[in-house]
Length: 126
Image (cartoon, rainbow, N blue to C red):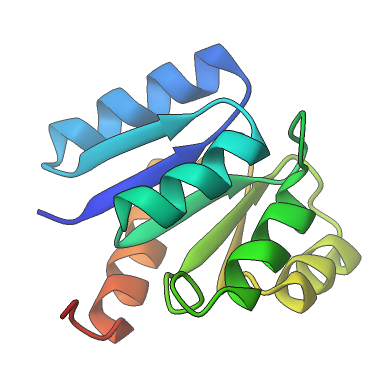
C-alpha cells in the first residue's frame, strides 16, 4: 500500500487521521512540525504528503516550497490541509506548490478521493 506522510501539529488530528488511513491500508509516517516533515519527506520517500499549513518550526507553505524546489521530492503530491476555507487560501496553497487542497475538519470520504486521484496520477517510483 502507498506510504503517506502526515505533517500535522495537532495531536487529535494526527491520531484521528492516522488511525483512519491505516484502517484503509495506508502506511503512515508522521511529523509534528514542518522541519521534521521536510526531513521525513527527503529520507522516507512517501508516495503522498498531507500537509497542515499552520505548523511550528517551518509552516506548511514554506515546507511545501522547499519540497517542490528539491529534485528528490518535487514529484511527491502534496495535499494542503487547513482550517482556512477561503478561495484565497486555496490559491495560496496551489501557488506554494500543493497539488490539491482540503479543509478541516477533514471529511474523510472527500479526502480519500483526493488521495486516490493523486496517487493514480503519480509516476511509479524507480
